[in-house]
Image (cartoon, rainbow, N blue to C red; front, side, top):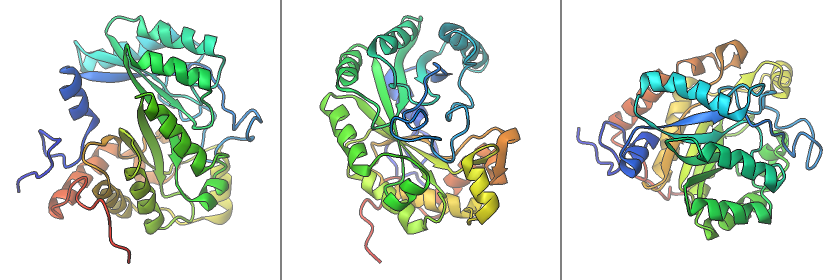
Length: 316
């Protein structure tokens, strides 16, 4: 069966990050995940305490560098491992753990610029919250985007207020949308994180989140499956309530339906979570990341579907 999807030179029926890098930079590119030691306004009491209920003590930076090491040393550690697999590559410094715009501007500049000065670094990816970017930071990011490839990754997780309150996000959808617009006014690339399988969300709710994002000027998306990790508030809630967890098959189906809702030019940065095995409580099927991705490909081919096939799904 021929692949009808235009942004592909393989069997993929969605716009992969690898395809985007290859056709943008004409080189293999990989992210070097870093832990710059930032905290979060949802932890220190600025907007909330305790953080999001699913977040580990590492602030979603399980595969970031070792915080006990200097930033450049972290970079070299991660890079040396990656180069064994992909020699002659270019790099993007990925500020991953916690909220990476949540510091004085002078600190941010020192951190970002030190990574940009590393040979063969072609850009930065900065993970943050929509309520944690000041006007001064926005102005600096705008200047930065004019001289390097820059992505700001915004956590959203869901558009549904009831779920957002339950998971303790401590920001509104209005706040998120306003920040997307502020970033895009400055021509800064935006990638959005969402989570499938959040407690008590229905399939319809998850698809609505993707449909909403398709109406915004975003350049990329990361779709995660909810991970229940040890020593998190979510783990305590799950032990008490045993809320339903998506099966592997249902996750694949919902994710493919979300892809159908998204414009073909939106780059898909991630299609599943990647928890550490020793920390994972549920779902156990998440540890087989490659097979999940392969089965997404099979599902899309079997159903002759692809990213952007159904941008506006009819109301049921």
